[in-house]
Image 1 (cartoon, one colour):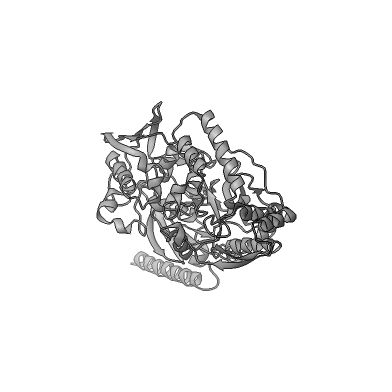
Image 2 (image 1 turned 30 degrees about the vertical axis):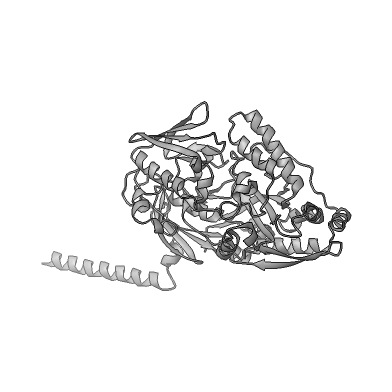
Length: 527
């Protein structure tokens, strides 16, 4: 009896101690649940927050034109091929691939044991369903980037597929990187939801998207490549530079992209923060509508280029990080050829303005999105062009609105844009994507990103020719012609090539920024 009573007393004592411990942790003396989040040794209960500079436009991987949307998609969706930290092509959902000698047939041996987030099996039929969606819908951006050249998709067995083109296309391997594979059930039953709620095979699956506030994904525990990853990732669009920096310093964000150059010293002095500097393939430019007066005169476009000091742009806008854009493609892109640059020369610019009949200048507009760096860049252009009598009005728009304004025009005549401050990133291995969408007359909006409405018959012929040859020497010769001709025609203000700057908390691992500016979170974790 006494022993039983002793056990009762001991139990009461233990319960009391547990209750006291529970009470103390909820009051100021303990560590709150919020303070503890993200600090466990494994990724089981962690959340990673990534703050980026612009809103996301669409989660449809077959119709994406912006890097931030593509970055989020990459967490959830995969292609037959992927890319590594250097931007080089690597196998992903395809374990092996081969290309025929005539560059017309692409054969893929697919990875087995892979499932989509909705439980559908990944196999050759699933790949065919995704590819046929792109082939049959001309409104999708990827349609005109190689998929309109496909003549057949042959399912050779459950895990082997062959794609045949009607003519060689030099950038097709890269297209198999960007053409993420979607669940066939989603395509067949809910195609209208693809841009809002995608379903793929990636390491994370879609949870929710609150426009303008956040997009959340969570770990897919049946992912084919097992590893310890964070449970959840929340992406937040934060256009204002100071706000992103503050979030990183306080730990409200674990990764910010880009890291504002004006805040680098402040961030580098913080022991909890790491700064990452990555050479990029991101071209920074202003497209000039070559079909709108007075920009239809090459002398005006050249005068604008001479008026803008590219070295000052790098120094003032990018705080010294980056290089002048001395061709139509960045120097880390295959087949790059340096051109004779438009060095800062106000007298030359004024002379050209006078020859074109605009000695006293004219009024102009420049469009751009709302993030801080874009506004700073547009203000720089405004100040520079004032020196030759061009009075520039800045029109800043939210990313989605800007995209609608740019790509909503059905004909060049309907286009209202005069100048657009923007950037373009292409894979280092894909010169096609760095040229055709931007300079071919077949790529006028909404079919492509030739927002300069640039048309040159020789360039159109060369772009077609270079994509139909597999000979690298011939490709190099043609690309040299393309670059020199376009650079002289000056459909852009050629500004600079970014050096990518990103910031992360020191406990972040497994996240990297590619040369294209994409954020890879496949193995994201917190120490």
